[in-house]
Image 1 (cartoon, rainbow, N blue to C red):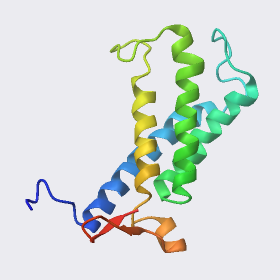
Image 2 (image 1 turned 90 degrees about the vertical axis):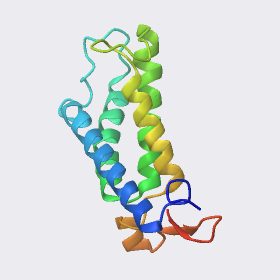
Image 3 (image 1 turned 60 degrees about the vertical axis):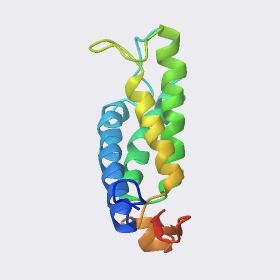
Length: 152
């Protein structure tokens, strides 16, 4: 099978998962950190802002989930938290305001959708072998249909 169409080697797959985890995890931390500075009121002034406890849950899910995702620690738990946070962002903020999916320079829910599907991808693939989950729990890889070890 061709290198372009065949399965990726396990180490390359794990390296790619590592890169995605770190970039997306750091992005979540950077998005969530300002919110965590005022966790119960970062949406004050916004029309139909959710209750403060939900605002705090979102802020801490972004910061804590981002750290866990980047480290590859409790990765699937972090992915579920982050995916849920993105669903909440779209459902509670973007849809009620009528924001479009993509609108360059204007409010839209494109980034939340991208973070949601990346969280789903990491939930499905797992953290890969270059993660704290793999180091601590020894469960990094599963057998792919071809029999080669794949990142998990």
